[in-house]
Length: 154
Image 1 (tube, rainbow, N blue to C red):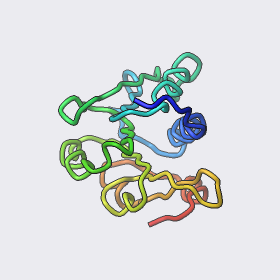
Image 2: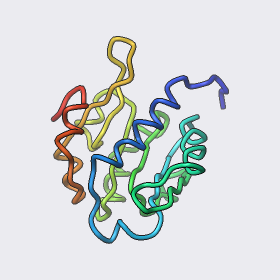
Image 3: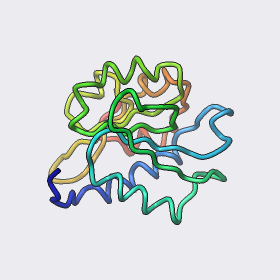
């Protein structure tokens, strides 16, 4: 694994945490821990782990799980799909289709292939695209404030 520091990992972690303020999960998802799953290799994982020490989502404890393969993916509120797993997005979508999961990706074009939010770089700045249809398909409600923050809304 290469150990170059992903300078955007910290920024993405903050974005992901902030998404929790603009998206509403169904009632059963408001109990227990708030789980963010990460599939693949990324320095974002350790940034999210650091957040668990100080942050909560509403009254829920923040929990971060790392999945090395599709088979390990289980119920989570947000699933972050790393670049090295992007080619598995269609299988991931099939696997979690009955859950209320926000799929977040980081590869151009994935907002059209099943991701709810896709990180992009525009003018050297971290931005994101929002595919509202893909988010709402999982029984999640998107705040208009999130739409206003998105670079593009589909």
